[in-house]
Image 1 (cartoon, rainbow, N blue to C red):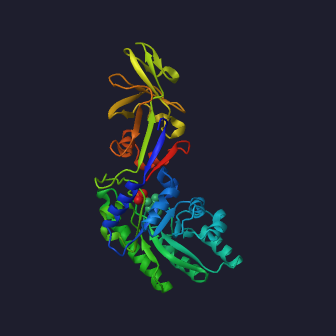
Image 2 (cartoon, rainbow, N blue to C red):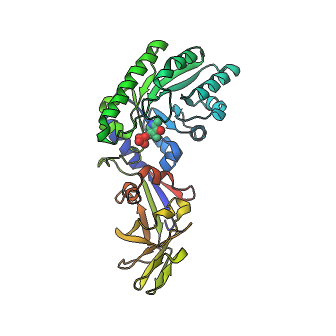
Image 3 (cartoon, helix red, strand yellow):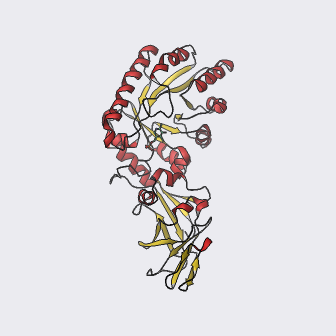
Length: 362
Ligand SMILES: *Cc1c(COP(=O)(O)O)cnc(C)c1O
């Protein structure tokens, strides 16, 4: 396609789902994390595909992300990881499962359930085991259990926690302490409520690096999209960001390229104009550190990345206006791109703006 497009390869998604599932015991449930638009892809298309191949659960960060899935016809249970008080009505109305993580949220939730005489709602109890990001700490657990037991309509579908450093094998001791604390606190909760919620803790790199932490369900996000912090050769990237050479400008030695003249040609140059810029998620701060690919050949960015375009060096590359440009794909992947600018694939993928057309490959 002769414009900027983000291809989403659903075959790669299915492959990754199968690879990750093959690491799990047959009885372990699979929660697919499709927050942030399915890590910048298309959460509805991703969820539909995963639902059709047997995923057990979805997770999103915020309530409106869950509503989008319900409106698209997704029937699978959906956990909202970080619901806000203002969205409690929608959580109930759209049959979403709230994470109970703070007294502020829990008390408002209970008030709503009592006031509206909600009959039954499934929730997940979030325990903080050391990430210190979201969840109840050990000393708060008894109070939380009391409140939940006193609100009959609330049923715990799950008890969960999140690991801080599953991708860092120097932190094995800390990770094991988180796992042990989770075992202890989840047993305590279960003994007080006398039924068995689903226990879940592992994210993608936990699945690969800590098989002992599978519990009843795992939560995988980045792995489904083809990445794992220890880039796993078995996984295939789902996202390919492609563009086109919109124009070629011949510059003479000494001429400048782009805003603020930050690049000066040291010799005569063929400059390619590519219609993707910082408004699309290719940050201006990447200007000096990234390159793109034309028929597999590297072309570096020249000068400052603009809002809607960036310019590249085409010297030594045999190409024409209209030729395809690859920003990243399954071969030159988003993890390498992210490394070149000092971040992680998660950030690059989730920053791709909605202006870029998503093209679904089935
Ligand atoms: C985002 C998120 C995940 C998914 O993590 P990946 O590393 O992408 O697999 C799992 N659990 C929670 C609580 C999250 O916020």
